[in-house]
Structure formats: C-alpha cells, structure tokens
Length: 94
Image 1 (cartoon, helix red, strand yellow):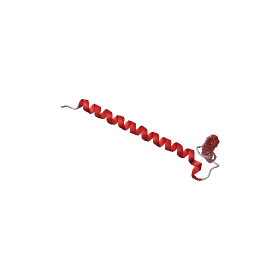
Image 2: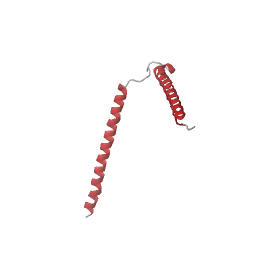
Image 3: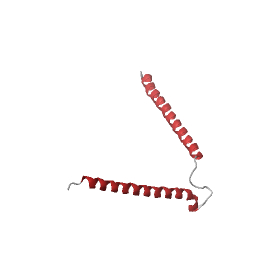
Image 4: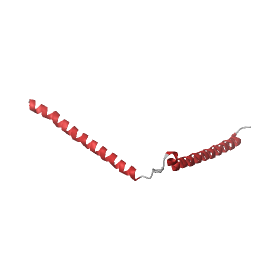
C-alpha cells in the first residue's frame, strides 16, 4: 500500500515536469525566432556612424510626424470651432 501511494505523486511530478519543459522549449524557440526576425529588420539608424549623426533618419522622421500631428490637430480644432459656432448661430433662441 505504501509503494502505490508513493508512485502516484511521482507520476504527477513527471507529467508536470514534461509540460514545464515543453513550455520552456517553446518559449526559447519563440525568442530565437524573434531574434532572427529582428536581425532581418531595417533599422532607422546607420550602424557605422557615431554620435547624434547616427540617428539622422530617426530624428528626421520623428520631426515629420510631430509637424504632421500639429497640422492635423490644428485642422481638426479649426473645423470643430467653425462647426460649433455655425450650429450655435442657427440654434440660439431670440
């Protein structure tokens, strides 16, 4: 009776251990694949340059995005202001 009760926890431990190994293996494979894909990517900086010049493309792109967002925000704010005043003009009671 003692030997049978000792075998049951051992089987559970082995199943748990196998699934843990499987999860760890899948996780390692995933991160290895991520590393390979990131090496294939085109990065917005020049690896041979030094200092701030290395990030010229990155800073230029960031500046373009900031200017575009400011222009778009101004356009939306102006359009909103005009529409609110037009609707207010037609709906106010005299």
